[in-house]
Amino acid sequence: MKPSLVLKMGQQLTMTPQLQQAIRLLQLSTLDLQQEIQEALESNPMLERQEDGDDFDTSDPMADGAESASPNEQQEAAHQESSYQEPSQSIDNLEDGEWNERIPNELPVDTAWEDIYQTSASSLPSSASDDDEWDFTTRTSSGESLQSHLLWQLNLAPMSDTDRLIAVTLIDCINDQGYLEESLEEVLESFDPELDIELDEIEAVLHRIQQFEPAGIGARDLSECLLLQLRQLPAKTAWLEEAKRLVTDYLDLLGSRDYNQLMRRMKLKEDELRLVIELIQSLNPRPGSQIESSEPEYIVPDVIVRKHNERWLVELNQDAMPRLRVNPQYAGFVKRADSSADNTFMRNQLQEARWFIKSLQSRNETLMKVATQIVEHQRGFLDYGDEAMKPLVLHDIAEAVGMHESTISRVTTQKYMHTPRGIYELKYFFSSHVSTSEGGECSSTAIRAIIKKLVAAENAKKPLSDSKIAGLLEEQGIQVARRTVAKYRESLGIAPSSERKRLV
Image 1 (cartoon, rainbow, N blue to C red):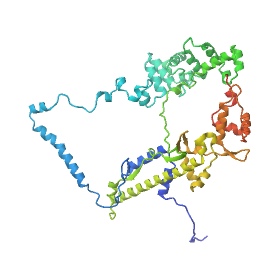
Image 2 (image 1 turned 180 degrees about the horizontal axis):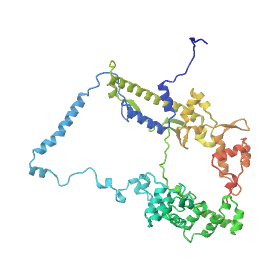
Image 3 (image 1 turned 60 degrees about the horizontal axis):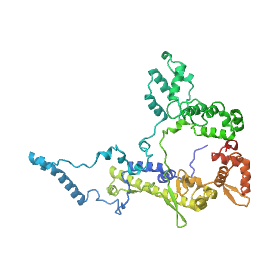
Image 4 (image 1 turned 45 degrees about the horizontal axis):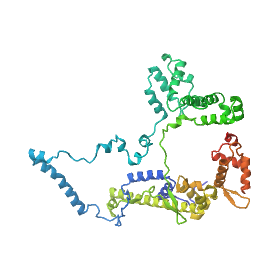
């Protein structure tokens, strides 16, 4: 083939850097957006936060002559400089007698010892002085790991160096739930043979660790964990011996809820077995979870919905949306006709600041439009709850606001709405639909709410099966298959009927 030149016409979609930035900001969560804004403030000197009460500078930021300070600022600076030098001159001219006479016996201070070191109950905050359960550590500590909590108790326990080495190794093998993950034989193999450590020594040290707090720590299985907690209860606790016997010999029957077999083997009546099970249920099967090592994660709502005069109002959370503006002083340094490197840099920074502010405004406007349409569509949920949720898909909102579905998906991801019923992610309001016998539609969220309500009101001795729940839904005009009921039930974290059976 001979090479040739061919002229073709075509269309190609090209995304400008400004559009890419707008799309990227649109899909960020509130916390990520705040971090992005902070990075922009640190990297771009033209950007600054607009504090409450500040007014935008209406002068032309591209105008010249803004380099020098105003006469008032120069006069104020000169006054501060002269007032700073006066004390040193007057001190040099004072004689010793005058110096001693002018110094008061008690110099005034601007802080008190109690303001920094709170040593008494009266120095606690006013909000906490009336609260007997006020805990200083819960407001100042950054979280403690389970291992560090156990090592702290280990340092208070007297033992030999060898036993302490064994204890540290065992503590390292305890997982976040509080169970010993490695067997004692595997722990023994990890030690140097020259230490001459025996298996009995490791087991003895383990028994000492199992006396630490929280109760049940260091257990090798669930039975031992519950038994350790029962042993720390007072000896006069009712049904204590029966509970120890149950968790030691018949825990598998309790897990399968075979109450008839339990009553037969333990020779207990139904009411007596119920009291024994209640005592076991008061224990913690995951004792390590009591020590929270991670920091709590807070959700900052992007949109606030409230009812005023029988109307639902939608507004952006201004506390989560910091307002930015172009710094008028730095913008005034930019000269139109100057092509130097410094002026070019400042001009580019000014343009990027304007693009960034415009992208934030576009994000807020899009979020407001989508949230308003969601509230308009889901008024029933806001008034009556989950059972009144209507079916809603991304296409419905995209068609209402005149945007693409991908844009709606970005807006509703990791964005939260604060309502009188709680804080929900925007995606929570979208759900598929199921046809009803009357020709209408019912959302999957409403069906989940009905299933949750039916399970909450069921007889604990005879819990509802998935087929029975499907029949009850059909009586309400909602045609749902048993497999669909099982899927919805599992999504709600509700166990099957065989596992929900309890003694009353």
